[in-house]
Image (tube, rainbow over all chains, first blue to last red; front, side):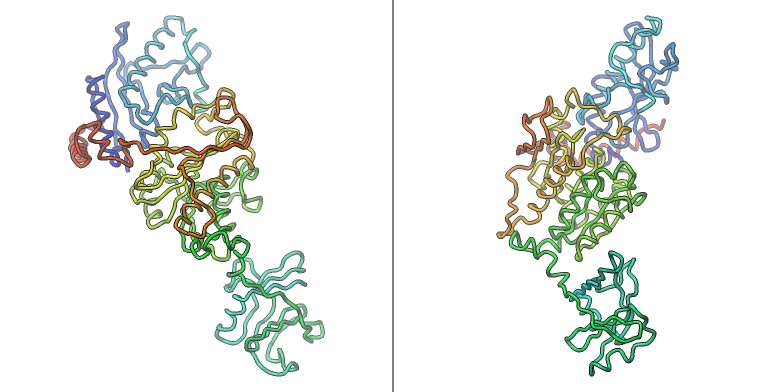
Amino acid sequence: MAWYEYDPQRLLIERKAMALKFPQFQLLKRDNALCWYGTLESNRGNKYEILVEYPEHFPNMAPSVFPVSPDINSTDLNGQLKHQYPNGKLCLYYPGDRTFSHDTTAATVVAVAAAWFFAYEAWLESGKQVWPGQELDHMQI
Amino acid sequence: MYLLISDEFLAALRVLPGGQGDLWGSRADHGSVVRLVEPTRQEGQESLGRWVRQTGKAEDIGKDLKDVTAGQLILILDGDETRCFVVEPDKTLQPQPFEQVKLYTDYHSRIEGLFDPTRLPEKRVVIVGLGSGGSAIASELVRAGVGHFDLVDFDRLSVPNLARHICGLSDLGRLKVDAVADFLRNASPVAKVKTYDMNVTTDPDRLQEILQGADLVIGATDSEDAKSILNRIAWRLKIPAVYAAAYDLGFGGDVFLAEPPDGACYECFHRSTGDMFSPPDDVTLDYGKTISQPALGLDVRFVSLIAARVALAYLLAGDTTSRLHSYSTNWVLWGNWPQSGWVFNQPLMSDFIQIDPDPVCPVCHPDAYSQAFLGISKEEAAAEVKDLLDSLPSF
């Protein structure tokens, strides 16, 4: 049973939050998973199309954010991915820091993704040298 | 030879058709201990000789028995009298003394007086997660006399498990549910155990079938997903649940009792205590559960024992003779040793805290939740979501 079947109210709360904060996003269905699809625009004027996919066990797990366009590859000069998983998913949370809770909606996740792109642009401008914040080896997770 | 024969074994032979047959039992310690205990034939038993119902003079004993060989046991049931012999090399029968035991009535004699012993054999407990915690809880419940177990886990016993698990080397590679089931059957003659090789996060419908009619469920898995799903189903079925958790490195743990319909559910507990579980600075984080955390079996066992005690107290609620009084709070915190950022400043400390229900919890108060956040009833929300899902474009 999908999360929105045993907790349909939560889906309506998600929709309400997204309509309030990111009305340009559209809710889509991919197989049995639900996704938000939309575009973020950074302060530098760059546009990023992203897909926010709810996991099967939402809200025990955070939605995943995947860049759709342009193609985002945060591989650094040493060949290591920066804050991104091999499948393209953005790393938005430091594991175990509990910044994502059961009450966190997709709207907050999209806001965190916007902050990710801000950091990404800063990293590009630094010549792929500096990315603020803690980082794990994304290959081990 | 030290020969042990149970009343139940003899009672079964006295009514078996045919009047004689093979004597199925087990040997231990190079044959110096022989047991004729289980009334039905068990896996791993061997034929130790013959039994026969007969009456007559001593010199006639065993004369009807054929194909007996030296060293075999001959058990004679003569009315209410039982005699045992060993076949000598010359085929004569040498009387063999034995100890007669009452398997089903004596096994709980050491706990008599603590509670009404007739209550627990009828209870059915579902345990989700048979790792070091769940297996130890099962071990305590069966020894206390709980009669029916449903064990749910998908994992197998591996070498690293040996340091903390109740099962051992001879169980390596086995499904944990099967290994623990044998442990329970070996611990109690009354234990009836069913096993389910499954992951509750991928098969919640089956979990619901298993939980139907259970008296209690134990959430001993380290997966928050599994606990969350268990909470939703158990609460809907009005089945109380005990959730146990041991912390990284085994510095402590906690046990929470979710008691529907008026108590706090695990979602309420999770929401109200989430802030307390930010890991202390000097504790290694469990990154995505790819790295096993070290912890002593004894430190995990303390938490398991508390969980078993909470479970027993719940199962015995209403028994006026019980000395296992219910706890006044639904959350028990346990500290094995002081930990920076944690609540205890001495080793082996406990605390008792009451977690109140969240009045707008999506699991245990779905109507209030719906009204508070959406201004509509849960039925209206379900209908709206159905329309929404039907109208969604596919990606």
